[in-house]
Amino acid sequence: MDLGGMISLRRKQRNLTIEELAKKSGVPKGTLNKIINGVTKDPQLETVRAIANALECSLDDLDDNSNVYVLSGSGNMLLDADEKELIKKYRDLDDRGKSMVMCLIDKENAYLDEEVETFAIADTGQQKSTKITRRKAIEARKQWLMMKEDAYDELRRALEGEFEPDEDTNPDIPGTKE
Image 1: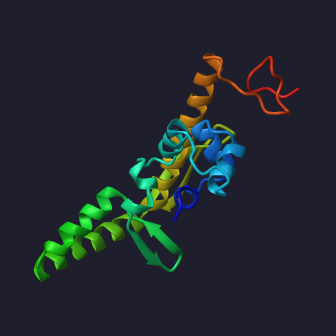
Image 2: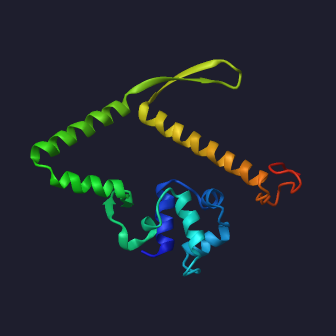
């Protein structure tokens, strides 16, 4: 798989659109599309580094020669360095050790799938509670942190004069529409 395919696979694993990856990496959407579609064969190192950072992976992770694929029902999955190391360690275990690891994984998954009560403040200012699984609560928190990080990055770029307004944005005031 070429660089464009690796970027596309990692982007899909992170559930990012091209637009979101462009925003997060600072690489223009057109440039990303050219790299992904193979039009740009040898992009600059800084461009690839920015994409890798946005995808939360290393440059090696975008190198097809250093990756391991696992076929799953939902398509190919890439393993990161930690996952590769876990597999190596697992393979060194005897049957008893493998059984203990599987037991721990099953217990952790059961824990994550338990419903917990969460609280939120509604638009009306009233506290609302709901029950969701711990797994969904963790995922919601990750998404919230990513949105918060994106907002801080946009503010930082605006303050440093790096802001590039969209077509429907007033260029004099970052983040405002005409």
